[in-house]
Image (cartoon, rainbow, N blue to C red; front, top):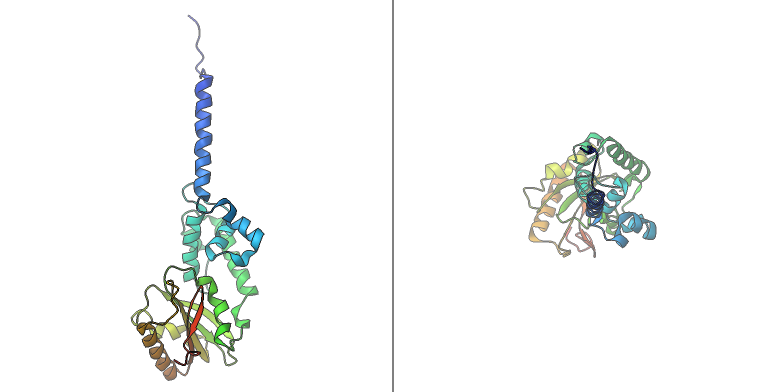
Amino acid sequence: MPIVSECFFPVELFEIKSSLLLVTKSMQCKERYSHFQAEKRPREQLLAFGAEKLSDMELIAVLLGSGSRERPVWKIAEEVLRVFDSLDDNFRADEFLRISGIGTAKAALLSAALELSRRKLCPGKKKISFPSDVYPLLTHYVDRDQENFFSLSLNGAHEVKSVRLVTKGLLNRTIVHPREVFAQSVAERAAALIVAHNHPSGNLQPSHEDREITQRLKQSGEILGIQLLDHIIFGEEGYYSFLEEGEL
């Protein structure tokens, strides 16, 4: 009886399996980057047009470099962006380790990038003389699909001490509470405050709720001795200043 090797494997079947494996890996790779068209992938965009042309999520995708087997890079970048928006000056690397697809190396990279930008691009060097000086500090938030409300604490020379995200979501008097808005300014012994929020719709005209919130914050600032200088509504097309429009 002829001896049949246990390692015998038809060549044709091996080639078919190999081809299927290559196709599967190729599809997985395409899935990871399908969110970005070839000519619009963040890294290529950055090299071609400069980092300032990229959205926050695209910049994070460049830092991450790649996704994981389970999650494409843009999905991880979206979640990292949400963490970025919620961080204060006391952030820790382990904030990023809670995100699926982020290991110690990428968590350390993101933390290092944040700390370097904080040291080199500290907003405290920015003096506010006109409402238009505030807009560049917030333009990277114009692509958010929710309303984000910010407080900017200023010293006596009207230099920015901090920019803080107070809350996000549909804004109303309950969510935008003076206690939360002025908390950082009180802690920093700020002399003045500017508040701002984005309108995802692109319509920069203030709502009735926006006007009510502004007046409530103005009254609270008078009690606390921290003047509310302006309330700015911003979007991709520019901004609306309550001060410039004579509403404050």
